[in-house]
Image 1 (cartoon, rainbow, N blue to C red):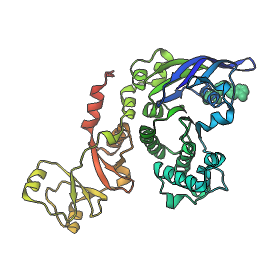
Image 2: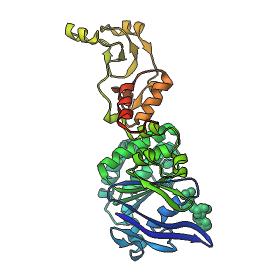
Image 3: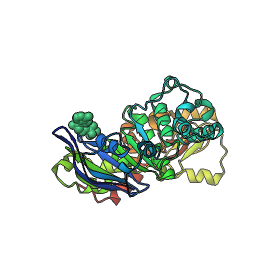
Image 4: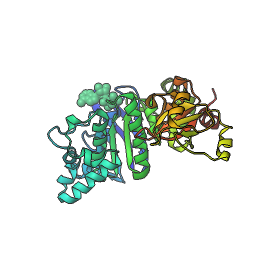
Length: 368
Ligand code: ADP
């Protein structure tokens, strides 16, 4: 648990933080959000003592961080920043192993841990462990940054605009992956962002800040449903019902797709079942999405092609880590009521429909 008690920070006469008090429960993600200069990074950096408060105290598991030696403190706190800061002349494995090496782990244990973490962040160890940072894409480098922060299994993670430098599509994937990793690891996380969609997606609680003060500390749902004052209302904007969709992950809503597999032989009862469907996604023998058709029966591969509308899976499909808001944008962008869900190799694994989106928005009390 992390607790801020009446923390202020001055730079000369300028008050960057003004009497901040809030608590982050163990295993939860707290997102600090607000306009540039409102004090988010300053708050974060106080926790691992990169800077010291002018007054007030910060407690980690009941202990004032001032009483803990900074090296010891930083070992228990993983830190992820925007441009990752991977060391250019070290391999991925060496970068991930920086803290374990400082802790004197033996080579075997470091290698096993590095492989385990690469797996966790979705990068095949055999392919990535010997690469150098310049051989990585922005999204890959960011994943290594997360792996490195987790290396010594710290209970606390500080993330300062961790996905800020990544393009929007990769950013959505990284947010989804982070959420799924956090479901497994349950770290206590403080996450800084100025992107409200990102906050709503990853947060258990959100601290909305303005000029070094807390405007509202709440769950994302309550921040959206009941913004406390005009500043909060302006900040969350007018499309709150749609923003709330960012909290729901496609994985939790997808169902089996209506699918026609090339060369598949169907029984007459299966064909009868298919008569009820309006259309099918067509996949090839390997399960890759190729297009859609309104044919009701299976046909040999060559003929299906003649009756099929080809699609570009990357433009129409979505991953299971995406949010239901992403799914809705895909529906509106492509003019479709059902979005195919693809795995990382573009194989069709499920589908979500406009109906699923409506079911979520109807649950909420956000009708405006
Ligand atoms: P945010 O992360 O919300 O953009 P920061 O926490 O980085 O904001 O900064 C809060 C305020 O404190 C800003 O006005 C910034 O200019 C000021 N500030 C931050 N660091 C220093 C410093 N070392 N010296 C003087 N002012 C600073």
